[in-house]
View (cartoon, helix red, strand yellow):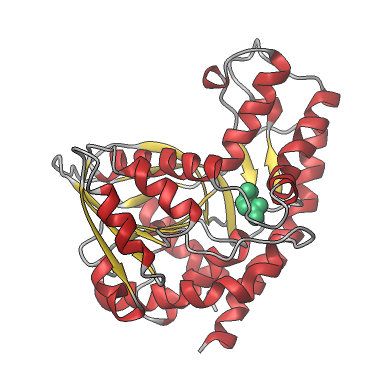
Length: 341
Ligand code: LMR
């Protein structure tokens, strides 16, 4: 298990490290779980990204080979190769600058995200093992639920395997940012693209905290009553999709869209830029070991985890009630390492 001190020390080290210029480069991306609904949607979006040189798809299901073949019928974009079967997992992440984990069992109506740990942890464990053996320098983006536990779980595993870099393990929470902006834009009758707001906390009904009081441009503001109902909507959004899909799937389309947005920004960072993305990472600034929020990422991973905001009374209340929830979820993930091997 990772101690608070280890996490904080590693974070401070990187914050002090200066960023070296990385020459323009084409990036290699691997999608793990590419035959699933999120994975195949994401892969078709990534196939259109000319900044990617090589796109590798992996899934336990052989169907991924047909998906790879089909993507190769789309003219242009990255060269695609597809791999299936556990023994091909290392090959599928070899030389990848970014590995995106979307493999997951979707939750059913009535389940909460934290109930998905037993279903989803084994695949992430296999991936972490492969990363440690084959490509310990890669950036790992995790989009598998329960996110609040899976990022600490992967971090503890990579630590155990001797290759943990807290600046390179990111939980994708861009969907919460997309939903928060879209719902506010609907209320305000403006374009969601014109709105910016930090969404902090974690990725669960009890821990997502959209900071509507920090929304910009400042002329677009919502009153406390609207902030309360928008927050409830954002927190329930994933569960509502699960319910509406009647147990067939959880969110896939908007989910893949938001992961693609995230990946595109990370690629810009890996090519030498500095970007801000919403993600759940090691972060000691809020009384938890992991926390989500707008995070500055550069060519070598996280440059600056989020740390300071101003809060309305309502947001202060949400934050103080989220901290114990996140701490519980973090411990669940870290402790789960014991059950898996
Ligand atoms: C979401 O927010 O839509 C995802 O976390 C999927 C889920 O199970 O809710």
